[in-house]
Image (cartoon, rainbow, N blue to C red; front, side, top):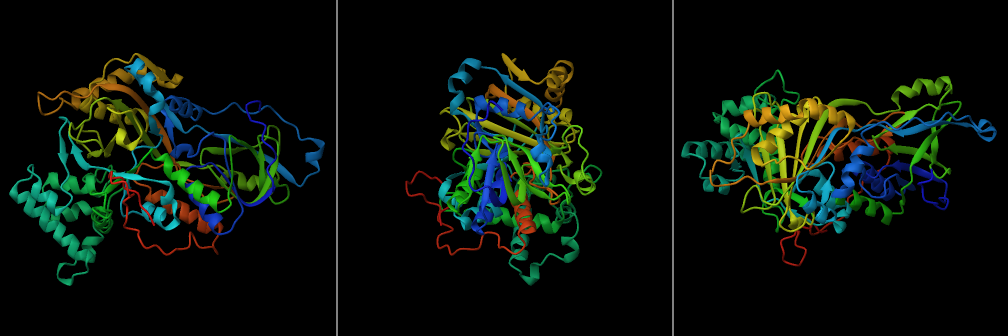
Length: 577
């Protein structure tokens, strides 16, 4: 371990909880445990906070993805020392497992990108936004983490099509009246539907949605309301944010019920105009999504949590007789003990070569490593010098299923972010694209369908990819691009409007891993959702499993939850308590 800095020994050597990894769920749990007066040691092998939820300089992103794309070489056989043989614990190896695949980094203007590479701060798990009324914003406010973050509003939401058109989503009465793309009949139907939903949420008996309708598929309820396909698409995929094709029950992995759809509409409606300086429903943090994990780490540190970065954990210590967890061995060689352990989902537990575990430990080994049972999410990052909408900087675009090519069964989401959010140089834009997928080839086709529709893609000058990707790119990558270009875009609907030129891109697939509570407790990987609500729920559930008697962040009095004015008048949305 020559690359490990010479850290002084950690003192004390016993904690209530050790957390490995500073991703969002781990950071939330560390902050909650510290608030509950637990002694917490929070470790991360990286030199930065956030792990797979981080925001990294452009120059650092390729190496981070590559370091988590292949399994590390197994450690050399190691025999126990005479001292360890007489101890009451055994060692279980701890190694990283591959999380990313089909990594393809391409530069189409290397001189320009190299000149500004350190001025780009890129989200590893984008696209992500906050709804102004969602659970993550409530948690940020209730815990005081808002002291460490500032936000700006996302200007608008659009629905895209295969011709490059971006249609504004009419998400309020005012927007419906102003929308010139809707006919009078469509406006009346949409207004009638929103009125029904608002009456139901207000518990008005004469407009109550029946229990039978609430348990039926949301798309069936929309059909019952007589809404035309365009309006249904807006509601299902750009407001309710459904992931899969709701019209085709044969492929849908997430058929939305009316009750859940109404709840999502309520969240969207409650988010619009909640904060004074955020006119829309969505927020994005200044300096990138990595600020969220850091905010909770700072909150934990204030409550006494001990932080050590650049410190890998090489092994777990388990009781020889019972197989129960006892502590960890650091790369520095020091053993640290704790009652509880939370693991980043990228780690897997391995047995030392030639060892034979005790029967109690042998029974627990199948539960040591997280399982990939939810498919994959494909992510793309693009950099341009021109906005997709000439008069707008920060906005969301949703491509509903089947909107780009017939085989597209999932929604594709794109988020454009500009320099006023301090993630790129002035005059440049970052586009985040993502979609759920079954495999890497399907994911690649989805991302290429969007880029070929919206952007001019020149031949790459510099391209980096792992060996597997190089083979796939040579054999099938161009075919995928050509296919999606033919089945997708004919360019912007205005012949005089030129498409932005792609300057740099990254494409990669990420495993979707659920957290687990067992012999080893682990947190989930970033999911395919647009916000963090499911991840926050997973963190809360895990905390309550390990500390059932403790309250998760006791509520504190707060007088100004709705005040987001940071006092400088520049429109930053900064939730303040």
